[in-house]
Length: 488
Ligand code: CS2
Image (tube, rainbow, N blue to C red; front, side):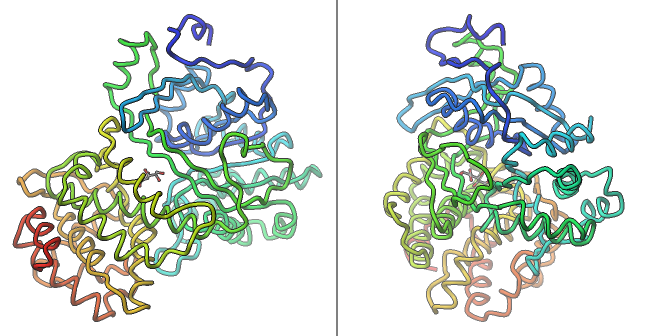
């Protein structure tokens, strides 16, 4: 922190006194995304509107987060956010809204106490799609998930968010304190409702006496979050050193476009986020459908097809005319027809901006980040479109093509013969089933935890088998070209 004043003038440094900032938000999951999104909005609000009551206490719960914990501890929670727009304009800003930091594996009691402290009015989360522990087939909270089952057996030494929150709220209740708002910031449909359902289901098993208190003392607003945030590369760290004389061990790079839309359902006085561009709405559903089914699904489409072709980044795939033509067709013909109109927002404009965000050559967003955990992403981003289109007897050709390509993707070899890793919590199953599907092609579609009962739909199955056969015999590029010409 002492060094901040010595930085070059083209870096924007915090214009407020951090000692004056009071923490009232605890955020679990201090990912790159959180640092580019919510922590950035809070920084802007504190800096431009003097809302000093909303500092963030960052909390990580997983052993795998030890590195970010050490970095942020070393840097007093400060880090650099480098924003890059498609025309090449970059902005470099020191973000300083994370004023405290706790690490569960090191001191779980301290985390529970911090979450139980009545100063904390909002507990926000980015714990990723798989952090909600939903049973893939039923969509219900999975009490048998190993991490959850472990917390149920051992509730006083929790590992999951649910375990921690339960202990913290138990203390609040015991001490006669108020509850707080739990704000999910993950890319899952109805993220607040999903969190509520998961949490209450955990509590009914572990601490049923807490249930009624929770129902009265918590809210779970749904929200839609949007900012493209790639993994940080060694070159990003190096460039900061060379060009800006900033020695930041873990800066964050992100696209300039950012959006955050929230249902206004907070237990206490909330930050005046609207002052920094956050939108509040009554019903998030049309916004989240638009975002998940266009942006996140678009990413998965480019990720799967691009990887098979040997591309490494989103912008490489998005700047290939054949690939982008395929994607635009997917959006126009299969996604947009199932989206509801969104108030004050044009889906056409969102789509156009999205293509330019995907094409931004300054954002090196790796396809491996995108394809990582596809078994959780596909059901959330692509399956809803397929189901709605099928229900209306409308076309699902491109979606079927992408699912077929994902089967081939799980062979782990691109069209140049290069191998890549399948990073997925069910990677063994995906790889084994993709292998079996060389003999019995329907096998892959029968992975119910991803596709539910889609295999029983003859229209979809026929298309899927047709494209899988073609894609297995041809390169992905050739398959896309023929598809775009309506020749397959
Ligand atoms: C990406 C998202 O993980 C993914 O598959 O689509 O991380 C995406 O970059 C963000 O949701 C953008 O808002």
